[in-house]
Image (cartoon, rainbow, N blue to C red):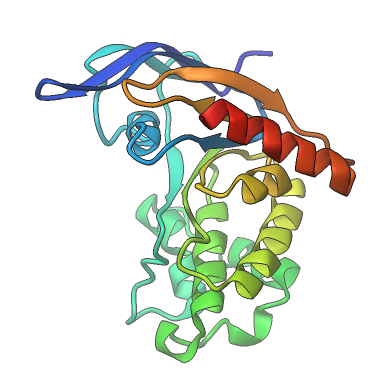
Length: 231
């Protein structure tokens, strides 16, 4: 099976500042992959290259072997305040002139949020706004979903609830997910694989498969191993 994403010998610099070098990565259909590393190590640079927001200084990025489109979920919800919940969810398909209200309704039903479909963003809590933003990102035909610290603005209780909620929704889709996070616990809880970056100029120093069946002791040991890698 051909990977959804392939990065080959990616290098990028800002002026004379070399941020990443020799980054090689493959993401396969249906994977949820967490990208972690020290602050300033180039995680967002890698994501922006994959999303087509910047071009690498050297190397190549392939989506399905050539080019393609992705859904991008930033740290803030970025909902349009003049649009209702369902209108925000329909935005991506509307841009592509392929609006299907039934798809948006189906997502709202699966998420248990049908009752808020006609509300505006100012009527929702921060956690609910973030949930709607996730549904908007899921309401596309794009195979790849990029999440840039999507839970960072939420309190711990809401964040934990959101992680469980989103992973359940993703398990019902065939989307491939790349998620940036500073939280090792979040990476272990959410992902099927963790990619660890070192200090800049960063490269991927280890790829770690994560089981859904980890015990508390196994999760703690995995976290300790990752902390050691990051040192």
